[in-house]
Length: 491
Ligand SMILES: Cc1cc2nc3c(=O)[nH]c(=O)nc-3n(C[C@H](O)[C@H](O)[C@H](O)COP(=O)(O)OP(=O)(O)OC[C@H]3O[C@@H](n4cnc5c(N)ncnc54)[C@H](O)[C@@H]3O)c2cc1C
Ligand code: FES
Ligand code: FES
Image (cartoon, rainbow, N blue to C red):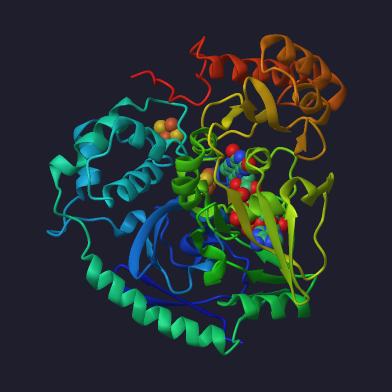
């Protein structure tokens, strides 16, 4: 065992000794490195106070993304580059353009939220182009402040390149440094030297074959992908994780392949990367994905994790069910392909065997003429869990419904199709009378719960109304597509 994690920080190699593999990056930064600029607000990925930027190699180049340090395990930083708020300065040693812009627009706020805003804006700055207002809003939607306003921060983001555009890092040099480091780290991993500390043992295989064997040998291990669920088991539920197998370094799980009639998305692909592809195929799917968590969460959380956790309120399952997606599960015994709706058996029960993991998701491209709609209802536009997530896909011929899929999250113990409503529509004219009949049938499909997000009555009524909304939108009669639109913030 080697209890060392190696990463680049401020141009130097850090060899961090890890006493406990489930320690978060935030804890390590604050308590071991005394880099206290990165703050703890919520410790659950919700407020952005802990935002840092992580650089990693993808397709042979370094890519930077903003993530929440509070739910990121330090061990996952092996072979990557880290930038914290203390890393920022201009080439002449003064304030970085992001910081200068915040000062000049009076955008700096309290000491808790400001470092996080700085790092979210810095990740945006690293894209090297002036962002649109929508892109800026998206970049800081995961940085919460309820005291002042976002207007000056948006102004700062608009001006940061104007204030100093030539403060981008030397990407070629950064890529080289990471390639050298990665070689070192990979050798270490292939030698199976992993991290052990406290009661936790941590493995990070780099090939699917190694993952399959490891999981077969340790079927009780916790698989760790983006950690946007698992991280909270540690920070909020104070669980001890015994054996953890990180899937984040398994190259095959991060692949996106276009196979002509469908795309295959590796289970370890994060929301941000998957969104770039899926929103091109199903724009409404992209519209809902854009509202999953925040930029930081979408940069970490994976599609596989969102399906695997079996949550009845996960956003991806209903969207993928109506796209007729399938999941591929792999174990030492081989691979199985199943329709995604069949993966969800009951609350907390999924069709997955010990030692078996999700390898990829197969998403068919939409058939010509397919009408596809997706809607997320939550109390807040950004960074909120769905009360109801709805998705509809209808294919008609000569005005008659030939294919129909209706799926909901938040309406049952699992993500679920509305079988009776679908039966009411199949083979019938796609008209308002059929839609009304399907809406009525939906009452027999679901017996939703009341909870803090919505009452049972609200859920059923809204589910029925969303079908009508979908129908009206397809007729082009009404411009009702407000739910996935960008909100307008008060200045
Ligand atoms: C602040 C915040 C906001 C969020 N907002 C939303 C939201 O708007 N909508 C939404 O749907 N979700 C939301 N989530 C939940 C979360 O982002 C998702 O559930 C996420 O997709 C989980 O993926 P992950 O990669 O982080 O999984 P992890 O946390 O690493 O793992 C989740 C579960 O899946 C298992 N697992 C992971 N990968 C595999 C695999 N390949 N095969 C088998 N099992 C696997 C793990 O063992 C674990 O049980 C939010 C979470 C946070 C913290
Ligand atoms: S401390 Fe709130 S997101 Fe990390
Ligand atoms: S949380 Fe910092 S000013 Fe509101």
